[in-house]
Image (cartoon, rainbow, N blue to C red; front, side, top):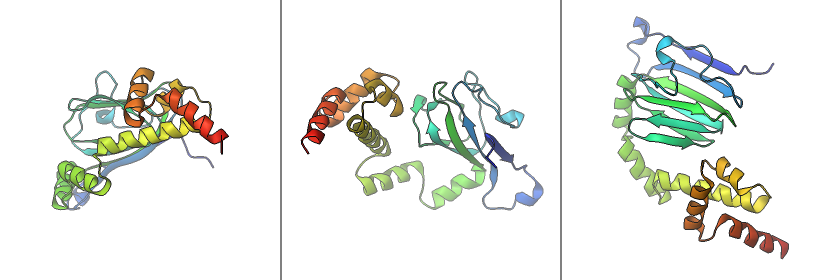
Amino acid sequence: MSKPLFYSRYYPDTPALRGWPFRIRSLGYNNYGPDATFPSGVHPDDHLFSWESGRILPTLTLIHVTGGKGRFRSQPSGELAVPSNTGIFVFPQIRHAYRPDKTTGWNSQWVEVDAVLALPLLKQAGLSASRLRVLFKQATGLSPKQYQLALRMERAARLLSDGALPVGMIAEQTGYDSIYHFSRQFKRMLGVSPSQYRAATAISNKNR
């Protein structure tokens, strides 16, 4: 039996749950194909939103986009591209909106937790946002943003050397809306343009 395209479960704030040290308020997944209506599925009124209006939640939500791509917008971050395999933390009381790209759709999973209890637990464990950045850089030598950029460039280099996928499509698959921006970033990171890199790897593969 195949999984449905959408699944969601919301847990009401009942007296029996108020003594729990960590509460999940909702969880679910959704699979949006190209040109699908977004958002869809069954959700409470206070969780529904549009790209134009956005929404504000009192909770902490983690969204993992496992396939496809899209956009995310919040007041602190501005508008950002969301490539495949991206995790998004939505903090409480922050107006935000997100949506899948109409050409690719996306698959995503989410879990929503009680921020009043979850945020102090993270801080007690030393996992504030600033602490996480420090630990991440100690482990990798890069900031989270630099590390994500390095992974995107690594994937782009692999796609360029593996086949004849157009550079514009590789730019899209690595999260860039602009082929110009992608090419400029690629050259800054690897020292050559995408077309030069492809030509060099083709010669190298031929001589093996």
